[in-house]
Length: 440
Image (cartoon, rainbow, N blue to C red; front, side):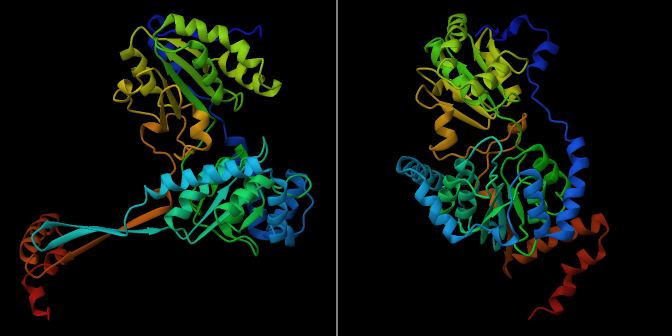
């Protein structure tokens, strides 16, 4: 590998140069937004037939309308195709993801007495339906199905469906179908891209209209979600993969290099930095990367080297821990690994990250697949204000209040003062002495 790893010394950079390190690959969706318009219109007008036409046009798949929904026979065939080791790993992951999200689920209702005789609280309810999008273009991703669908099922969503592009032979990835069956999903539909978003936003004769859509996808799919945001909840924004690996002097830099490649290999538009205060760790990591690349496919080497030798990846040497974590919090990474023999000492310094994986035995690979915490995480700095996908993304709550006869006078008195000040006569009258005439 003759490419040079990008390397920055944080204290030698100008504020503008430091700011440039915070940038991600920003996809310009303007062209896609223009082009998805006709696709959306076609689906809205022609329904299932448009999905069949789009499958042939965009996926090279020849399917009929009655093949849009995966059949029971297809589920059965898929289960026979998946080897036992993979099937067991899917079940292992599903069990952990389910346990994690069951702990997130709130009780049915909460109530507290804010004043004597006056009670307020919330009642929690699942949203009615959700479509989980599983991409297919760059591979097969049963893990995406598990991460997106399990919290919806735990939340109690009445109808959880899966939409995924068909392969050229009209089939759906066998492991994805096995994962769906494992968690109790029976509705899987063969459609992808902008047409899939339009289908669940409007509904067709075959596909149901859904309240929300979750899951990553192509720029076409992302653009369609933006266009149709007034018709369907598009879920949390999800851009290209990104990570920061922080390593202190107590760990081997070669280990840091190994973990740096996890998110860098997703694609050339990913972002991945090693941040360290140790020149020795930085140098060891740079030396180790070619050895790690020797054990990866040409495609993944191409992706990760593009990232680590470019302007949005590489190695950053910080003068001290304060500077290192100031940068990390400003970056607000999707994935943050803390490599140290004492990783817990750093947790209190972290304010902004989609997930924090502590220690030498917690690589992002585990979080992406089997630990149970959700791998659908905010990107592009959104971790400063947005949380990972979870049960509450599939639930809502309504406020509930109850005032007793004894609690009413004090509440009414103070409310009337506020209503009078703001000039709302109807509000004031409703809590005046007039009310007593009608109460039985």
